[in-house]
Length: 138
Length: 136
Image 1 (cartoon, chains in turn orange, blue):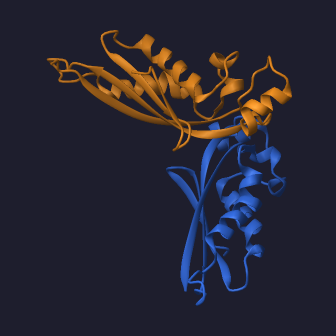
Image 2 (cartoon, chains in turn green, purple; image 1 turned 90 degrees about the vertical axis):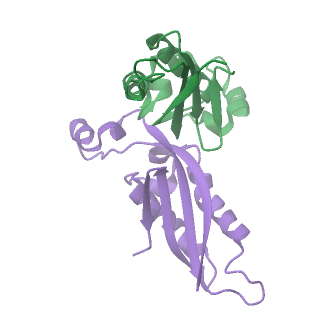
Image 3 (cartoon, one colour; image 1 turned 90 degrees about the horizontal axis):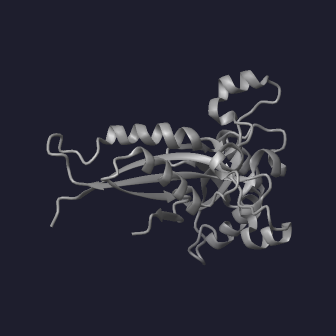
């Protein structure tokens, strides 16, 4: 048995988006994505939970200083996504459909690069109170 | 007198922007909410009606009928839409949550049977921000 502990930081942002595949015609887009394909966009309040797993540092007792984690998310994720149009304003989605699944993967990749490789990371993203995704799947 | 509340939800894009103002003034006043490319929310809509209970049914009003009314008059027009661009009853209006609550009230107020009054529209823009309108 190890001493690994999971710590979590909850953040939120809101954004507009639409689900659209530019390689498909309008009928296919409407048939697959329904009202989520509205050309004038719609939007959500996203709730983001970032999970970090590791052993508490012997000197600080922290897995990760949650204030530092909060600032990391604020600087690298929320500034990029909050009050934005995911399709138009965020370069990661220039050629990627901004589904909850893809948003979670993008957030994970951004944070993974900034964090100690010894720590495990997982992102849970709520698009609505009823729809949420996790990446990576464990 | 009893009060009955039905909770519905919709999500939509919008921006806070006054076309009579310059871009700079809009950005200064509305900040990130003025993003010309829109942003969006999950809205939670609480519709409260009031009146006396029908002695034969035990109902103030059949809540299925209330739900259908809100769906028809409000949700169908707002859900997965751009509030500034797609909604007939918001044309030319500011799309703040305050204005939206008042306009939702107007969509519903004349469609309730006699003896049933609209009491409150409570509209959450985020889990942390909501407005209430009582028709006053």
